[in-house]
Image (cartoon, rainbow, N blue to C red; front, side):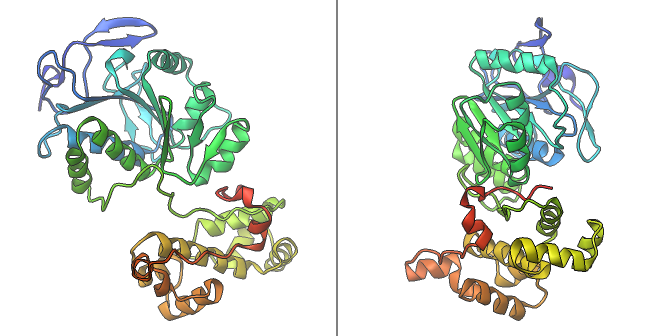
Length: 385
């Protein structure tokens, strides 16, 4: 096991309420940059309460793999630290606590400060010490990153004014409700604007890390990290988020809640009777509500959602039709193909990216649902209950 001195890099400063103290420890397992030379990439990480562990690990592990030769984890070419003004470990959304590796570091020593969020607490205020630190970093010209709902923390601190904010489609309506004057984007993986980067989270945290590694180290270092992590390819920030949600102009909260349950259970569809029970309705009541609001029965709407998701996979991935059928909740591939053709007008295999390239034509436009066509400004919004 390496000692603290093995993990220490060139002298820097750590900040606690504005008080600087010399010397702070980077995360990692030893190794250092050449004496007096700062590594090309330095990142400080702040964790929100109930942060998403996967977003943190995907982001950090790409930095770790790019920072050293092989898999030795030494912060030589890149360095990172989990920072906090408090010694108490921060609890992740899955219950695993993560402790700090450093107090708040002098922003002048950092290229980026990333705030990793997770479960939303709309009524919870930011930590004043963290807010003050982020504002000091912004004044110093350090790029601030919001990962997952870390973007909410930057917005609550007043650090995203005049900039677009990239959010997950799942939290789009949450963002609109809390920040009605801000511009939210829910169809991209991450956005960079004027010293701010916001990332939808999830696997997008890996794509953002790859982007930063390629910028500050090299494309080969980024490629090595993604290959070791078994990522098929790096996606650009402008790439579309997987599974764009169905968003409808429906006033009844019971229907919105039912639609949300459907969206969250595509591969293994819930029986309509169970959805009705979870809403405190009888199946007959739920049928009447859907018929009145959408002009169709719940089962038909559910099937349309699943086929819409399948269409997205057909248009944007190279996965087999069988895999896509299973992901869309169809156990029988022949049944899936028939239903898909009924809705979209062509068989699933006819509109694969490779088939379109062979034809030299663009994808067949997906038909719009009547409610979606009547309210196109809601495209990208999640059903919110």
